[in-house]
Amino acid sequence: MTPLSETKPSFPFVRNLSGLLAPLSFLLTLMLFLALTLPNFATRDNLKQIAIQATVVAILACGQTAVIISGNIDLSVGSTMAFAGVISALSMTSGNMGVGMGVLIALGAGLGVGTLTGAIAAYGKIPTFIVTLGMMGIIHGAAGIASHSVNVSGLPEGFSVFGFKELFGTAATDGIPYAVILLAFAAIAVHIALSRTRWGRTLYALGGNREAARLSGVKMNWTLVSVYALSGLLAGAAAIINVSRASVASKDAGVGYELDAIAATVVGGTSLFGGQGGIPGTIIGAVLIYTLRNACTLHNLGPDYQRLVIGVVVILAVLYDRFGPGKSRVTA
Image (cartoon, rainbow, N blue to C red; front, top):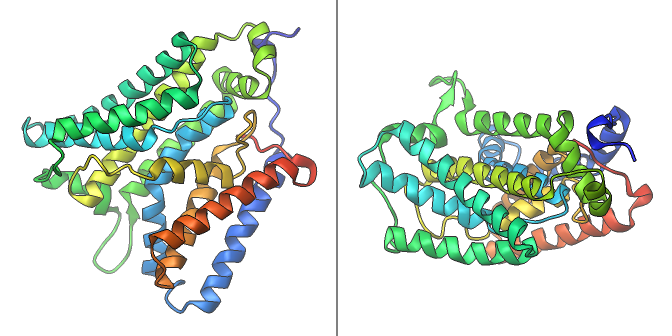
């Protein structure tokens, strides 16, 4: 058997393009339809709002993509984001720390939770679905205890840069929101890690055939811990934007985000069965999810309708992955 380290990555451009074609075509068709039927949809402010709203879920989904590619799932990313946000906010308010330390603490809290989650799953030999379901409750409870179940407010003014400020923006022209810049850095970094490193090839191997990967010498425990550590780190990054936009940190800030992250990942072409997927499709999926949410809002449809629509789209995406023509693989 050829060692994994000697296996050359094969991510043909044509295969990438064909795998992205379905979600991209659906997104463009949907946006064209909405532009023709909703007068307020295609405005600059509305499209900009969709992009900004999608950043938090897109960052979470980048981590979720890596986890699902490896044949696992992370149900705790929403709670991890809320916990990281609460701890970060408390450090800047009660702890009188600066914005820089607040950012580092958010990232550190997310990384710590993700690492712990991966370690429990890897060394406890417990299915990741069960571990992350349990951690979702544990971390949500910990965030409530730390914040005494009240919102943490009074954040430093400089922290608002991540949610509201723009690079190169002026009073007359729009710039690039810092939230979008942070997403771009995260997406590019994870894309490179998945498509250009041995670690990334290991994740695809695990998701494609776990036993074959083990026999080829893959360090199963380390790989599992590392992919959940990445997911946690990105949850911490998402917390920075989420808290900045809300101007408060709440233990409930992450409720529902784990499902949106999974939805964006699956709709973007990553298979829930593992072994295939990629970041470009995930970004498309996140934008698609929030385009649908935006359309529901413009139609004066409440959250229940939004959840119904997103749920239907996710099921259709999984059915397409399972039974679609050619069952094409999407790679990073």
